[in-house]
Image 1: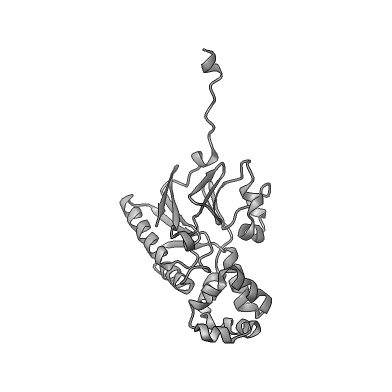
Image 2: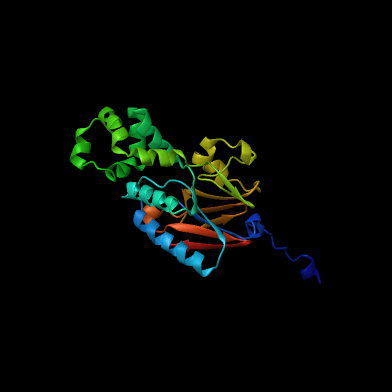
Length: 254
């Protein structure tokens, strides 16, 4: 009797009750970071999984940071653009790496170019038509000038159209996280693209269940009102996607 009285009640987490609207199926893809090989693999998995589950209103969301660190950022952008051009419902979030990339290509500022390189942009540069010898011969000012012509305008225009947050049902999809205590409608782009500790260390509930990338985990991070799916693909070769339908969630991984 006493044992029953003092038995712990199981805690229901927001992620266990969250739903997407009936009839919808959502796939969200974590940080690709230049791994076009893994992206092709994961997209094949998504296509097969979507087909196996039957007809639905299917949406695909990229959580940002398509570029930098890995060997083929230009190829990733081409793959993403080709997927968009199929007419499928595909949406893209702006990550901190896209933000810096756009500034490096548009602003002709050696300080921004240097920061871009420091966070993994050198690999991105080499995915475009420039040799290492050409690259090494340029000083930072010359490289800043070269970037604007090195990257196709279509790539820059595509990335400039990326969103900062997407809300579907009980879920909100962002790149980095949200500022706890601030309504989703009032979140700053800088937080949505860059926040880390203040978000991942927060233990209270949030307005929606937040699906995010940016912070690398060895495996999917499920905690309270947040689901982190950046599994460090550029180094681990594990690119992760979450699938959502009704109240169900599942994961695909390379």
